[in-house]
Image (cartoon, rainbow, N blue to C red; front, side):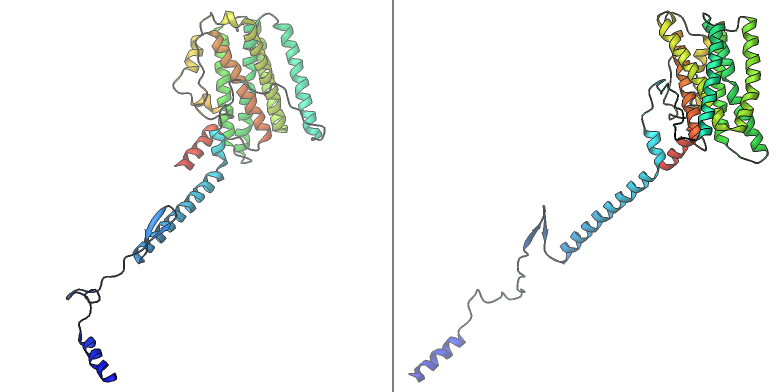
Length: 334
């Protein structure tokens, strides 16, 4: 039995292998099919090249997120951009109530403000008696006096700069722009006949001469006190024009605007007009001048901007020019 099985095993060993088990002559064995692996929403093919692409994509996404975080941090560091991008306040809108120092404030500040309010009320009482029914003459006197503080501030600042005690170029620039604005208000009142009476001209100019030296002394003693007094005067001017508009609005709309007002407010170069409005960005206020009513609205709103600037001078050590802030924003953006 064992002898008969040996030839059979030898025959099976000499028989050729099946076709499926032999590789075709001249060809290498085929590699196994690559398996697709799903990673999230993207199908990646396993293999060394695909893994390198996935790693590069992840690294690029990480670098982009890091760059966006750095840009956001840089933008947040420039607080001046938020100020410039803020919407401008409404025309002529501001708190008409004077804010005095609280009970817990410095007694010196309370004394300065109380004295300024008393002095302002006294001047208003005298003007009410002299110019009860003469609005344009009253406006002429107000605008003649309103120019004086800014010229006084500039004089003292120039003196301090000459002696090397301080140098505040932005303050001088803003105060000069305020003086130019009040000068054009004065020209408008003269065009309306406010200076037609000799006694009115004498009273306005004599008061301005006296007021100049008072303001110089007050500014050298306490700039905060001088700025607050000027704020009181500008607030009275705002209230006076606002009351005049409410009482005579319909009549003023029927009258033409003076040529000097049209030339000033509609001028192509309004650099100095923007300069004294430190509470808003340049080019954010462009008034219209269709009639005399618009003129007095513009003058009233100018007085409101003066009030805001004078209030800022009391609470900030150094006043910033609106164009200086705008230049900083443009440099940051670049």
